[in-house]
Image (cartoon, rainbow, N blue to C red; front, top):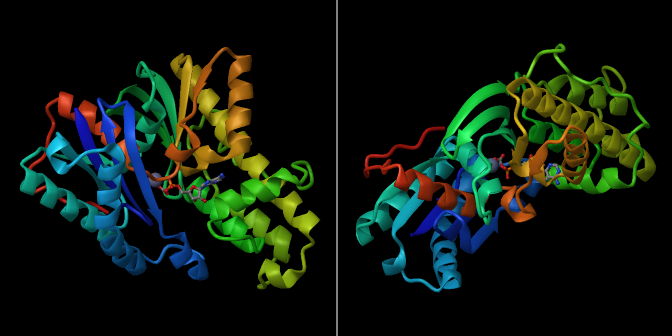
Length: 336
Ligand code: KG4
Ligand code: ZN
């Protein structure tokens, strides 16, 4: 079964074709990062307009790379929640149009569930049951996952998502947008022990996360308490920027790894899966691998290209949704 997937929930226009939930025949991503850079974050109206321009070429390219015409597509899958409403509506309208025109089933996909599925692509067997950690610009959550579409929420952020914290700290340090990859690169050259930022554990048992206090701690460290200047104006040396980036990153990663292992211990899980844009972070990938290995837990990491938003994870998950008989009608709605 070949499924065409679309993903337009935020600022990337994505289309992919995946066969039988596993084999990625194409995976096309048109990034809008250049359009949003000067604003330091995603501008929803600009994102919607850019999706409108990119959708047709991106879908055509993904079909061409898969060596298919629409006649060879068995179903169309699309992320319809959660995300920026204008952005979601564009992907959803394109998917409905294609499904209706070519008389194939339409499959609505939850963006967060698709991030979990990213770790299942190109694997012989599904990794469930496992503990899933989803870390992105909008989400930081732990789940007990028992199947591709069955996830019990164990904990989530009570304030900022971890990706948001990476992005804001990068901006404070005067690093390039998007911030996560910039912190990843800058932190590599710094000392993680340079600044002792507070670890937000929220108590010995909690599986929830909090990153706004950490972000504020970095702000105070950079600007001084109560001051109001940007890092660019506060003359941090490249060395200081690298040290602060590494110290912040080490703090965030320690809490993510610690809580995920805590969840695995509580549930007696022997497998951990990570997904979402921050799963591309090299310190997180290495530290999760190391710490899990010590307690005999296997870590499943998506390939780098499947961490940030993409449609392969959408088309892959849709295969299991179709097998479960859960296809949608053209009345499917977008939900922010
Ligand atoms: O999953 P994603 O592409 O979109 C959302 O669903 O939000 O995640 C984007 C987030 C951004 O906050 C970005 O800065 C972060 O993932 N990110 C990273 C890295 N690559 C992307 N954070 C840390 N290290 C990275 N290498
Ligand atoms: Zn995402």
